Length: 170
Image (cartoon, rainbow, N blue to C red):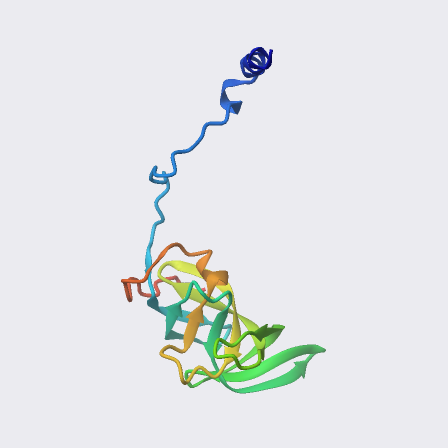
């Protein structure tokens, strides 16, 4: 009886509605346009400045970080803003939020300010949120986490510097 009911149901469904299992070993039809290396040069843009820095693409980090010094909170027209320096460039940006970042070395979590900056990597241009921190002890001034990587494509840990920032200036 069950088999007959299943055949009847299958006969009533439109042909396109019958689910087909996908072979897990089948290569995807869509191949990403670009594979990125674990380290890339990126361009960061604000309304008044742009500059290039090296960035580590880190799939283990959930958010992106940018080396900044002289971070100072101030108010402009009732909104919180930050004044800070990146790669010798003085910047002012509105605050997006404040986050708590867990430390891998067992130290207490850090509170960090987050700003939104425009990011160019290869031909991809996007707004990106960066928490600001002193990264002078790290190998790169910028770290791109999963929040940005989800919009880019695969990262190959064997590659470095696969693209140059080539977005048209916005």
